[in-house]
Length: 196
Image (cartoon, rainbow, N blue to C red; front, side, top):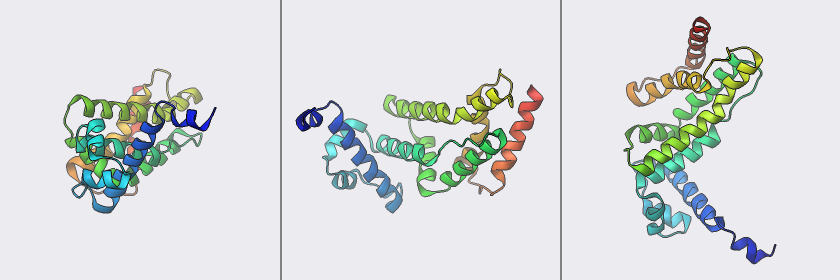
């Protein structure tokens, strides 16, 4: 394959442009926060036209959601220690750390306040489907090891794990104490054991 074939490959330029815009957006969010982010500055840093950004994302909010979701996917690896309790605590601890970071906090608040237009809904659905597919592996492996009944729904386990953390960040704005992940996991495991 020649160099010109590589350059003309479908999606190559679009993927590079998207990556540059996402990176610029996340940099600006870290530097200036959600309220200080301007699409014109994203365009300048990414070296693209502002109209290209609006053509692809539609709104500033959709751009922010997409950028934050991409960042979250990188920041939240799925642990595999061989123990359901340890994996759930590790995952909840990394999620709590992420949600209290400027990017994670912005993600939660933006998702909570975002509208229900088709593009926003699609971004939200893609993110949650991807997160549950990845993090649901924790429960799926536990089912294979016999730590959870075969009838267990992995997505439900993860919903029960992450909901209290998101609740505190978005609604009550209470601090996430260091022992909160372990307390949530222990309560969740007791509930799953009594349901079995």
